[in-house]
Each structure stands twice: as structure tokens, then as C-alpha cells.
Amino acid sequence: METDDVLSALRAFVAEREWAQFHSPENLAKSISIESAELLECYQWNSEPASTEVRDELADVLTYCFLLADRLDFDPGEIILSKLTQTQEKYPVELARGRSEKHDRL
Image (cartoon, rainbow, N blue to C red; front, side):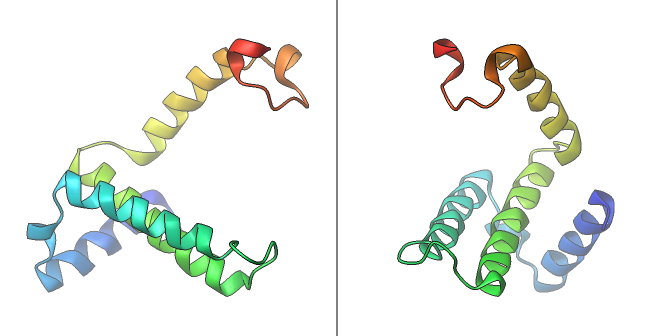
């Protein structure tokens, strides 16, 4: 599904329920954190949890991420690619390949 299709579906869902009034950037950011914790909870006692649980929690995280980006007038694909460019500069392949150290320790 394309980003525009996802955003259109989310906007329609929110509009039908008149939930935009609750979607301040602060509330959406909190919701991302809460849903991220629920995703992490899937792995709390099991390194291989049910994929349906993980999928559902990941969908919740992504939903709030998309809603926050939309609320802030950010294009999700654009900001991801922009950040990827920055990260590529911080972690050049010749220094970072196969290593997990932070960029300032490479």
C-alpha cells in the first residue's frame, strides 16, 4: 500500500469518528511511546512471539507515526529518506559494515 493510500485511509477513519480533536502532536507522540512499549512487551518473555501480535502492535506504532507526521505536515517518505541520508554520512559503509558501534566510536 502506498503512503498516500495509508494516509487517506487514516484521515477518513479519524474524520468519521471526529477524533482529530484528540490528536495533538503531544498526544500522538505519547501514543507512539505507549504503543512502542506494547510492541516491546511482545518480546518481554519470548524472543519469538506470535507474529500476529507483533504485526498488530507494529501497525499501531506506525499508525500513530503516520498520524503525527500528517499533523505536523511532514511527508513520511520524505523525512525517512532525509534521515537516511544523514545516517549514511554518519555511518560510512567502509567503517560501519558489520559493526554495531555508535558513529563516534567507528
